[in-house]
Length: 102
Image 1: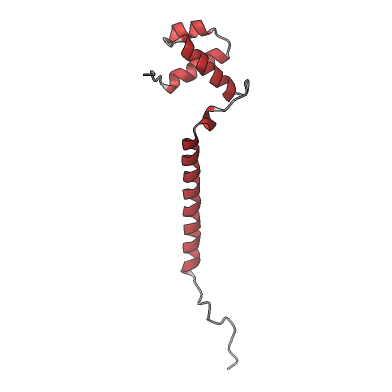
Image 2: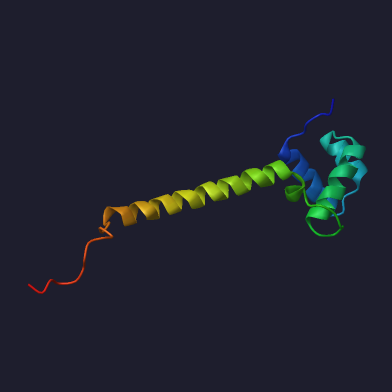
């Protein structure tokens, strides 16, 4: 079963590797397998545009879908609020706004 490392540890390791520190030194200092660090470095290089590939924030379609759902729900709330404003001052569509001649 894969071991999960804290995001802070991964971020620190990636920053050190992208700065040019050797993977063996980072692995020894942080207690992370060199193979894991090679994978992290590859993804970090993709994320900063140094290497072609799918960026980590684009890789999870479920996360993308959840973000889009949240955006749509926020838009819906705005539309509902605007609709409620128009309903407050509703005018009878069959009523006349013309002055009567009488």
